[in-house]
Image 1 (spheres, one colour):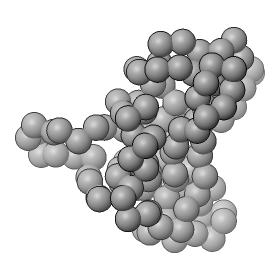
Image 2 (cartoon, one colour; image 1 turned 90 degrees about the horizontal axis):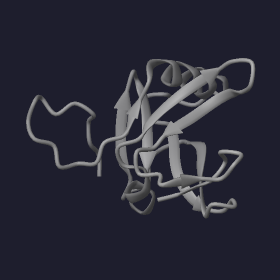
Image 3 (cartoon, rainbow, N blue to C red; image 1 turned 120 degrees about the vertical axis):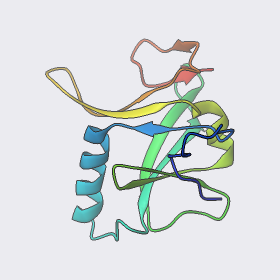
Amino acid sequence: MSTDSMDGGQADTQPEIEVTEDAAEQALALLEGEDLDVTEAGLRLFVQQGGCAGLSYGMRFDDEPDEDDTIYEHHDLRVFVDPASLKYIEGSVLDYESGLQAEGFHVENPNVVSECGCGESFRT
């Protein structure tokens, strides 16, 4: 299933995932560095079992979405989310952080009720 991140002001029942401009720029640069077609390929954001809090985020590049994926498009970046992961990360914002302590993609998830001490896993 494909959805656009913009709904023209109409009520939207589709769970939303946002992507900051910084995150989109970083992901697009990495996609292009892998010689992937950014008009078809995208960043897969998913949730998997693991970590001391129970769940962890995963990200990878895919050549194209799966048939049952929800597709979000922000700042020319396509983001693919499978139905099982969507229920854990709906309403999240994907950001890119750079600083003295760490650099990389970060998911700001309003559904998280607790995180492990290192911040690598979470529970909803």
